[in-house]
Image 1 (cartoon, protein in one colour):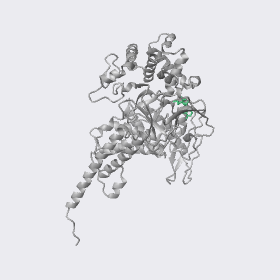
Image 2 (cartoon, rainbow, N blue to C red):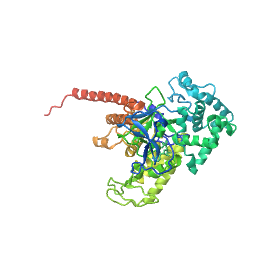
Image 3 (tube, rainbow, N blue to C red):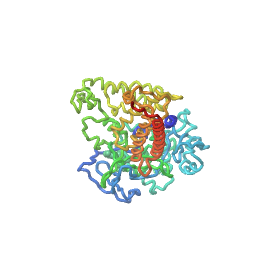
Image 4 (cartoon, rainbow, N blue to C red):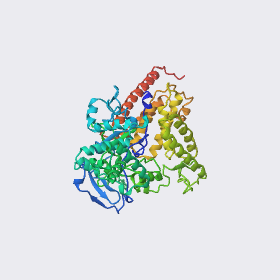
Length: 584
Ligand SMILES: C[S@@+](CC[C@H](N)C(=O)[O-])C[C@H]1O[C@@H](n2cnc3c(N)ncnc32)[C@H](O)[C@@H]1O
């Protein structure tokens, strides 16, 4: 059994998200940018050429860089990989914490505050470290930043704006390091070789690029365009290149529970192209002494001559939203296997059969409001009501996401009100926006569990966690880290001590009530933790033993197994001590 307090702190996140766009609030794993031509992934017309070794970073022998007409350079397997294998590991060239985590994580190793607390840089009073060792290691990076942070804060119009945005701080770290390295150093050449979309920027990105350029120039303390030359930039166009490379190649740093806490750039990992149905994933399992260490883990068996593909975005989203997000941030039109497939009912956009046959129907849309069950062919008649529910659900999701940190109570009201509306409209648990609302609802509920804990609040949190985990299991592949973490959360909350275990009036009633109570709940917690351990070993790497969460969950499962054993033995003792009834 475990206490619920440990669950309250964690704020879960979605799958990959653009770091640049999410720097204010939350969101997760990621990279990359823009495509100039439609991808032809997996098609015969794909033209591949090997890229000369000299332009490529040091790669493990199982990988090579190839260039395709469809998606530019990419990483391809020269060996077989099994699910859970580490395909590639790299320490980022540059990493910076998000503003909101500066005082709760170390700016050098990106670990959480130790029990003794973090130590603040006494000069800028902005960044914090585990100890003097971490501070010394980060000094080469922080030295220029320390002065710039002080200057920025002096001229800030308000306390809220006294630190530049996460993106600007990360770009600052990158440019100061470029300035320090020689222009022909491997480090700088690798950064300069990152893909830029300067010549094909989407008009929607102009504002972001202009805003970042102005803020960056101010942060670097530049007073004239000529001073850009100190950083190897010969024109304002070169500055746009730097920003475009940053936007298109940045990865979100996440904690072992996938909370996004910062940004990083690794040129070698940024060579990996995108698929909405990826065969690999980028994680930070925190299982080395070289933190933050990024690792690319195989999610499925990868054959030789197969391209390594990760997802840049949240793949629980339906195709139109995925496509829009990739176009806007990464500037390409995705033609991955999932985007090309014509599923009868994509679980991301599905409603239950109106005749309750157990089948599902495609979600009716404005463009196509005819929908019938893929199993029994019953026609959906409530298409307007479904579309209205989806519209208000999306609006509520946007609002609740924006409010989740500043006004969690309001955010929770929105999720609480909207989930039943979408459920009664017939959306399946994996459909958007129901799944996204359910995930947000779960994190809000867990972070506001009452003290002392009540049985009702705990049971409601278990039900919400089950809803999210069930939805995710329908849209993410086995072993995906987001799925593994969701199962771990479910196992942990099922294992929390029940304040008032319920007594079912009959065995039949006990099987009908969810969540179960007493020993049945413990058994379910144990089974869920075991499943989570298995999935986490895939998503965070077998050699990492599932990363930090994988190890914790396995230990919890072992402890729970002992507890269940003790309980069973207790029952056995009671039974054996009870005098048998001798039949007359
Ligand atoms: C991080 S980079 C990946 C490496 C990049 N191909 C290169 O040559 O450096 C991301 C960029 O690669 C291209 N890209 C990635 N995945 C793609 C895909 N599935 N289809 C087409 N282009 C893709 C886009 O131009 C995107 O902006």
